[in-house]
Length: 217
Image 1 (cartoon, rainbow, N blue to C red):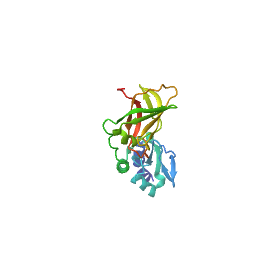
Image 2 (cartoon, one colour):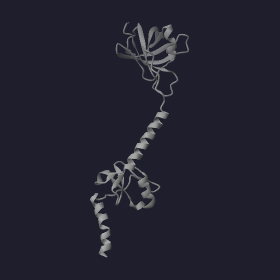
Image 3 (cartoon, rainbow, N blue to C red):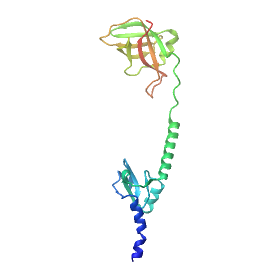
Image 4 (cartoon, rainbow, N blue to C red):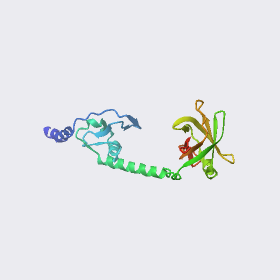
């Protein structure tokens, strides 16, 4: 009898050398399968490796001996080594995700024209509304410019108003600005700085980054 009992001793001794297993409940289960949470790994009672994903080794164990598949904290795996199959699966998943992102990512926007600034002049002001117009050579670009929320009017670096819209229906397009009630109207030259639209649904190639008093004025 002792002969047969001693047959299992080497296996048990080897398993104990790996560290005492501390099985825990998995974070969740799906159709009975244990799902890992943060810092959880799969281990097997007599296995010398721990598994960070549902790799082929884990899947095979679940298919043939599900009771032998346990979940433990990664801090409690003892001297068990990380499963190389899990590393290959993770690398393949990352490669696939990167390729999918590159395939779906929109192409980078074209660079803005050099000196993406439109000079403006005051053509009217009434009831706290400032109307700014561009010279003839910049009018088409102003028509192609959108106004997004919270676009400021800056005068000598101070925020003195909010850009409302581009009135592109006119023969001479106008940039419409709502002045701050505390601001003092300033006649003279202005300029609008352009950027790419922030909104994905934008239909125009440019957007107003800010309107400011022109430095040469």
